[in-house]
Length: 197
Image 1: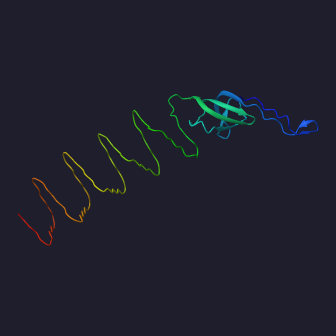
Image 2 (image 1 turned 180 degrees about the vertical axis):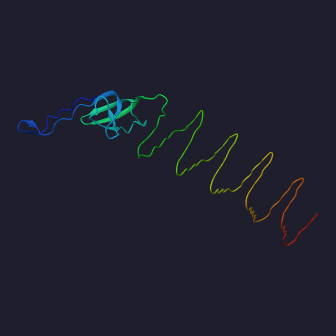
Image 3 (image 1 turned 90 degrees about the vertical axis):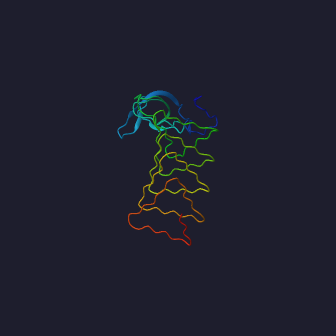
């Protein structure tokens, strides 16, 4: 698979080929070691510059057993065969290249926890469902826009705020069995018509 390709039409100068044939790539299973500048090197080829192949999404670390291809002064880490520390997390990285996952259906399961951290997060869906025993939302500003909204609370619905303003373009209805409006300072009721009783 990695045999040297010989060109019969290579130009010849003074009885020697003008262009030398490329070296045969070597596939090796080896450990990663740390270089003098802090970079990673292959234990079997410590003088070859190591580059992580585009298809190797798991970030290799020092001490890992990797499958590497070496050709001349260059080496590519193709895959991580064994982690140096079995408990170390697996890190998927595409360097500076975006990562797209496309499938008819996608399931992501974390038996203990899932954490997502990003500067911007967008969720676009025809139907969305959130089910939780406890749901906490914390935001500097919260904006909700909907054509229709319906909320049902079986027990207590409590709101605490410095100021509350409610505006209805057409009508507002308050219906309850027992009601009370309490104001510690001033209570004002203003309307074109006020009906009591």
